Image 1 (cartoon, helix red, strand yellow):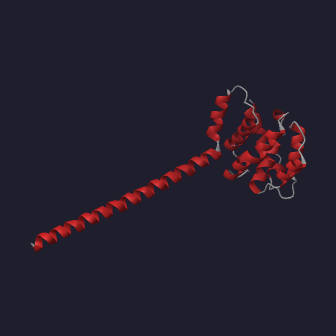
Image 2 (cartoon, rainbow, N blue to C red):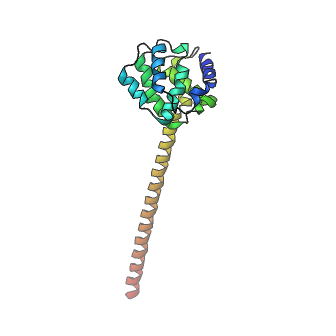
Image 3 (cartoon, rainbow, N blue to C red):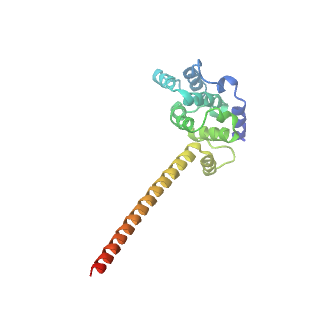
Length: 189
């Protein structure tokens, strides 16, 4: 099956593709990728855009470039390839350390399935819906968003509980004051 083969390709990525980018010219590697697997060569502005990427995003682009050099990705529309490398991998790199996409089996599968999905390919023997369902299960960016949203909802609920508690305490204090006033009025009569 294609997913397992591509995961194996990632697991066996040469050290140069797993290292910190440092002096590597990732823009040149991506230009080579577009020439080998894309439908057109990159324009100067596109190469410059890749050259401006930094940190974890750039590290993940390097790892993905190794994966995307596989024959599975032949004749990929260059614009789709750039969209994957820029936007989608930027979000992934923000959620997960790039080295985990080589070292961890689930993250390897996530990267493989992300690349396949973003480039309009469905794994052998899977329906598009089944492939999307499996990617949804693995999606680190979505999981992170769900956790962030759950924390925000919990924080909002906690704030609401505190407001209700404060309002109840205020009402109790008013009732107690009213009872004291009533007791004083009765006592004075």
